[in-house]
Image (cartoon, rainbow, N blue to C red; front, side, top):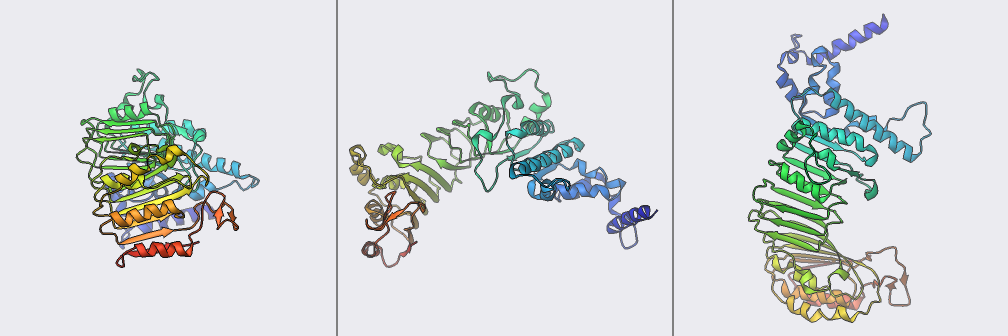
Length: 461
């Protein structure tokens, strides 16, 4: 009896929160469409919790069109360990969390009753062990005419292991190994492709053929984001029939070629190693490319033409991460920015492979580099050089001062980019990788080159 009384009392208090001052439960009288709209503004976990308010609310949440499975919303559920056994090691504990997360997502999808899904988002550290679950989730989303799909399967604090990443297989897309559509594929899946407008895949392995198939079969696709894709080699976005407006390719380390031709793209973001070929042709609406980040190994840039990048008239910020030998010339990187007249901020981050490398073939292009780097840049205002240390860097610094017309600020970071390397105190503070600390006379020489109106900052360790 006591238990029954407590339940009835709790139910009355829940109803009271929805009731008007006159005691009427006016909110429960609203049409389903309005209630669903209200619940869509809550997190998924909060929306599910409304099912205990009353019988009227029990299944309302099952019709919400936005399914956002953010790990932060269910962290306590995923991290909960059974009271009877706390002797899990870290690996077992991670498996338990992933199992709880997958169980929660699958349970919600099994109860969903809505006519379609506008947004489907999975954000949790999952890998190929969860492939069967993820395959079913994708099939569910496409079968419900999804508009937006995001699979973010990486750990924010750890780079994913390529061999363990989830792979989006051809059969999940209804694509055979020979490139043709599977005859027994669900017709609802293809309806889902026709409705898809946004696709974001992070730490998901997708090959060239699958990307081409997606672009060809998603006529409404406007935004495509590919992050940490370890199977992508050659990306082609070609054809005016594509409605694609926004493209992101971030940290896809295996990419060799990127071809963007005859498209309606208005923004393109690329961050990662410089591909062997990057072709941008006849993309007149590509006006919002304002930020670009590249990672290059200096030894790969054997000829002047390798420094040439496409003309990007609206690029405003360029971050270049370079792995080089200690005595490599850096003038080629000024050639890179020559075709970007509106560039305002140039950041160069340097790391070192070693100090002793005498290669006569590397010295040959330096005259051409100096000649190609002689021009005036009209808009560059801020230059940052991290890992500055030697005479080759001084050559770069001097050229920057000469060619930049309206330079406002230059920052030189002289901290060792490889802090784990040992420094030899008997060799003028030269570390084992060739890094040498900036001396006081060198600092004075740098300051004499800078105009009085330019802010000059030197960061030291």
